[in-house]
Amino acid sequence: MIDLRSDTVTRPSAAMLDAMMNAATGDDVYRDDPTVNALEAEAAAISGKEAALFFPTGTQANLVALLCHCQRGDEYIVGQQAHNYKYEAGGAAVLGSIQPQPILAAEDGTLPLADVAAAIKPDDIHFARTRLLSLENTHHGRVLPLGYLEQAWHFTRERGLALHIDGARIFNAVVAQRVTLAEIARYCDTLTICLSKGLGTPVGSLLCGDSAYIEQARRWRKMTGGGMRQAGILAAAGRYALQHNVTRLQEDHDNAAWLAEQLRALGVEVISQQTNMLFVQVPSGQTEALQRWMHAADILISVGTRTRMVTHLDVCRADLQQVIARWQAFLQSAG
Ligand SMILES: *Cc1c(COP(=O)(O)O)cnc(C)c1O
Image (cartoon, rainbow, N blue to C red; front, side, top):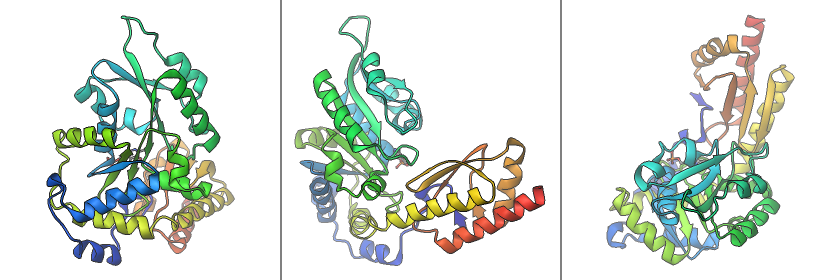
């Protein structure tokens, strides 16, 4: 199978499984799992934050981040298409009584600060209390410019808001911008990171922030059912990924760029390509046929009129050559 649906589909490599097999473990709810503790210390160090906390999923890490930043009746400003607004089942509203205030992202994935400013509610009994700005980096593969993050940081300081970055794919930004994680994370109070996307672990996310915040997060994590016991076997995969799978993300970016270029050469309309994602336009009459055609050749793509493809460590250039050959054959048979 060549699976371009998402970078969540990556499987642990033999070397990663080996690291998991040999992990020292303890009981992480008692805080004595040495491998979890080591992973959290490493994540804190590379993000330049005081502390970090390991979670089973990014959805839970984002939820806990919101629960820490906002009380009942508070509000966060967030992108209309952001994962922690649209794709997390309304968790902040359901479990935290936190009101989202979604606004439209600009073409480059940023939330224009003038629009954020306009969405902040005055201190008035009619309104929820605006507490937090939540950004997503990368957003649909797009890397938020550092200059924008710096402005957003100063803006939130002036307006008394906290700033959270949903950095599920933050390492794609790190690699694309050739900066350290800390150079990005200095512009946020808190940051979530997915280990289970392009970094290739089976499970795991991290929330980074200052120590008092992470202590609070630890209680919310327990309450929401994320206190795991011998989680060291999972944390070992995360440690392996941070060590071995970050710089190689460049290959995924190069592969996505190559795929975009080849599809353009076939006459396919490429809407955008950045980091490890590309979006192409497929004529609405052809979506189902293309999906079936690809699937028959063991190629998994979620085809829509706007089709997203994601490169990752389990697809190589030769796989993508097959995808191009198959796509070309489809266009010939359809044409
Ligand atoms: C995948 C993802 C998450 C977290 O997803 P989980 O599947 O719960 O780990 C959060 N934010 C973004 C932007 C994501 O892409």
